[in-house]
Length: 173
Image (cartoon, rainbow, N blue to C red; front, side):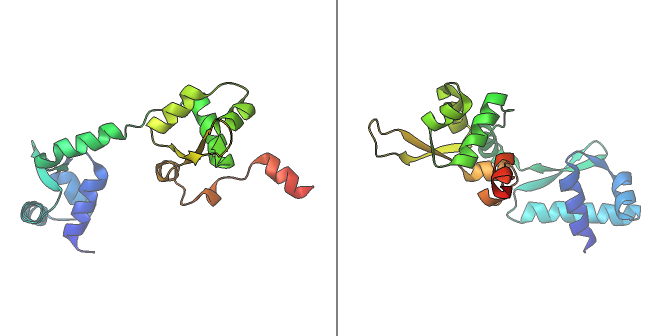
C-alpha cells in the first residue's frame, strides 16, 4: 500500500488532529517523508474533485469536509440525527421487524398498549415506513422496516434478525 494512501486512511480513521510526530511513528516515516506526504496529500485533495481537505491545526493535521459542502452535510446530518430509542420504541421496532407487514392493531395487541406516538416517532426517524393499507374496513396502515433500519442495526437483510426464543421452541417441538 502506498504511504500516501496509508496517511490518508490514518487521518480519516483517527478523526482528530495528529501531530507530525504521531504520523511519523504510526507510519514509520522520517520527518522529511512525513512532510512530503502531507504536502502531496494536501495538494491532491485541493486539485481533485474531492469532498475533503487537509487542515493544519497548530502543529497537527486532520481531514475535514471542504467548506463549500458544510451546508449540505449539516442538512443531511439534521435529517438523520440518531436519537437513542426508548424501550417502547425498541419494543415496537422489534415487533414491526419480526412481524412485518404488520398493522398498528397487531403491534398494540402484542405490546398490550396503544402505540400511535411510538409508530409516528419511528416513521419520523425513518426506521419504519408505511408499506400500504390493508383492504379491510378502516383501511389501516401496514408497517414495515426500512433500509435505514437494516443499516443502523448492521443487517444486510431481515433474514439476519436473531431467531426468537419462541420460534426456537416451536422448531424443537
